[in-house]
Each structure stands twice: as C-alpha cells, then as structure tokens.
Length: 343
Image (tube, rainbow, N blue to C red):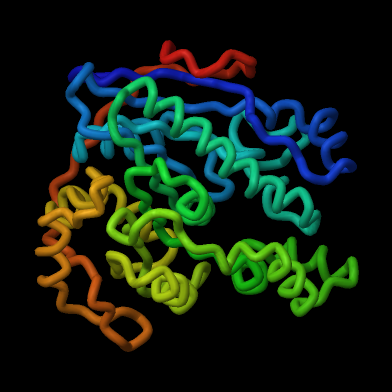
C-alpha cells in the first residue's frame, strides 16, 4: 500500500462449537472451509494509529480488491485507525465449494444453520478483538454494516472489552428482517413451503430472544448509524432498539440501505465532528467525546419516526474524495494458523 500503510492477511481457526449435535456433524464434514476465519488487516506504521477498528461486511458482500482500495484504506487513512476486515461465516474464503454466491448458506430456511452462523460470527469477533487488543495494546472497536451491523449489535451485548461499537443500517429484530427484507424472499418462500408461517418464525425467534438482548457497554460507547429511507431494514425498527438501549448517539444519513456505503466513504470528510466521535470511539472511561457532544447539540433534523431523538449527530458538508490502493494480494489458501500479524 502507498504512504506507509501495510496490508496483512490473517487466518485463525474458529472457536465455534455448534450447540445442535446434528448440525455439529454437518459443520465438521460439509462446512470445513467455514471453520477458518480470514481477516484483512490494514495497518499504519507502528504507533501512528489511535485505535483498531474491526470491520464487518454486509450479506452477500464478496471480498474484492475494490473494497480494499475504496473502503478499508480510505477508513484507515481518514480516521487514522487500523482496520481489520473479518469475513463472516459462509462468505469469501469461508463459503462451501457448492455455494453459488457469498453468504448463500447464512440466511436460509435452515434456521438452525442461520442462528449457528450468527452465534459463530459473534464468537469469531470476540476472538479477533481479544487478539488485536493484546497485539496492539490499543483500543479495539467494532463497526459493521447491514448483516455486519447486526453482528456488531449482538457483540455489544456480550463483549465488555469493546471500546466502541458502530452498527450501521442494522437492528436485532430477526423476525422482522426475515419477513420484510426483499433480499430474503427466497428464504420466506422456502419456509412457507415447509409449513412455517410468519407467526411461526416470529415465535421461534422470540424463543431465541436476540431482540431482547441489552448491551453490556455503556451507551457512551455505542453509536448508531441508519438510513432515513431504508426499505430493507426499516428506520422504525432501528428506533425501537435505539430507544430500548437508552438512546445512545445516532446519525441519520439521507438515503436508503445502500446509502451506507456512501456514508462510510464520506464519513470523515462530511462531518469531522461526527466521524472523529465514532471512529476514535467513546472511551472506556464512559465520558462522551467533546466532538460528539457538540455534534449532538448542532443536530437540526428530525428522525424518520417524526420525533426528534435528542442524540442525533450533525451531518456536515460534502467532502473531497481520494482513494488509495491496497497493494496486498488476496490470501487464497485456507489454513489453521492462529493470527500471526504477517502477510
């Protein structure tokens, strides 16, 4: 990479052990590739980064050099953080050979596999977070978009070591996601063919209880980002969990679901106060960064529910754009080594 950034390919064995004995056999025999976690780690020279950001991608998002150049490197440079992009289960190098696309096996009518994938995602994030914290001796936070944002929210409910969490375009109402997201039409069709109604799915999800989870982090270390016109993961669902979690800081971008990518590309350039607040992370002391407090006071627009959340962060002017190239080559081999910090 140019101007001092380096890019490292890491991999480690997932610590996930399926709860269902039947699925455990399938997991070990059919999904061997999924047991190895792959990470792309974009780093500043030693001592230059102020924190490490674990970045979790969206559903069906492939691992491409385009993402390295236009997103990971951009975030690392503009926010002055190291960025560790972790592949979620059944994505990238972790997808089975017969998978038609990234994440095909994540959201399916096989609800046991779906919930095991969510659980495995959280376990993998916690493993990576602990290793990065030990290696860098810096704060480590988590930012995820869409599916990655949902995993970020779940992680905030079980992982007190996270210095900050930034869920982007996400909530935890899985029953609503399965019934409302247009991209999950095939999943709904397969569930109906197996005799599962929407009420059956909702009852099953409620027994799992994910939507009722509450964070183990103070609200000062949580920063929601959501699209005002998101039709995949509706704003009113985001508002529900935001209110239930004590109304932490929130930033509404003026767009739909895919507007999250434009938001990430423009974060630090569009609103320096807001971007510094979430990228450097609310500190472990529990004190809100001064930039974020000023941004909240400056907020002037209402949220999509029609009420004004008092913690809405201000948006700023449009930015200039620059992208750099990540020169590291993709690691195409699956291995069993623990994260080594080397290419």
